[in-house]
Image 1 (cartoon, rainbow, N blue to C red):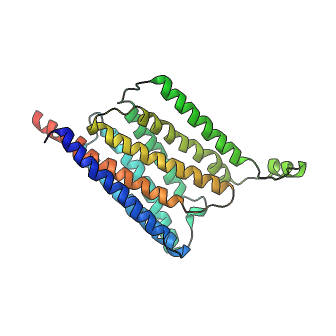
Image 2 (spheres, rainbow, N blue to C red; image 1 turned 60 degrees about the vertical axis):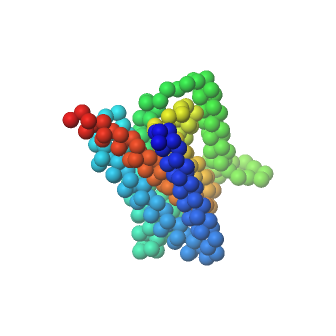
Image 3 (tube, one colour; image 1 turned 180 degrees about the vertical axis):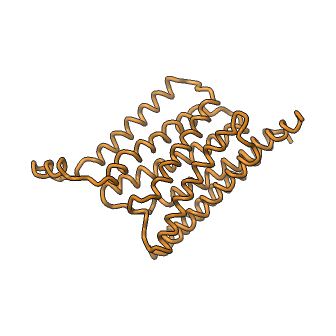
Length: 282
């Protein structure tokens, strides 16, 4: 069996596993009529998906080490995912033990999410360094459209929602004392979301047909793109004072499942081939 045939077969089963897992978990959660039970199942499912991705990342770093062209890339993605997992674990503890829904407020857990962004952006940047940008004009045009649209969307959602704005409404909006958490959510998270969206789209636009390398890069980019979209949706709701875990938890679960697929491929092909080549040199 040729390598390409082997890659195609593995890819088929991997995509089937990812899609079916996401559909089964998300549809199960959506089918639960009780809001409290639905949220509980979503939090548990999110943590299971997160720990699975984190474990695969740790295995990847342990097997590959920090050397070579991809060592630091594996480390970045693993640390980023682990930090997000810690934040989700904190949500689980707060919800079931402390009886507090941390999803609806700024807390210490946000530090883990914010730091996670940094490492995951570094992972995406490390991927971009290894691929060739085939068409700079098309890439820049699409990215410009995405960035402009993203900025407009967030600015529109920052504006006060007045049916017939009056001078008093405008004065209240401009003179309102905003909490620190409002500033963090309103400014920092959208910037970080965009920092995931831009490199993710750049990678997806320039993927070449090399299954061994392209598949995990594509999956990792899609994973973080899904997360960024969900985060921005949650941010918009938070700004409107309507913060809710649903439907965004479904996106976060999908994010971790897709990332697990990327890390599975890294372990099965990238790292196994790296170890084989390293052993042959001894």
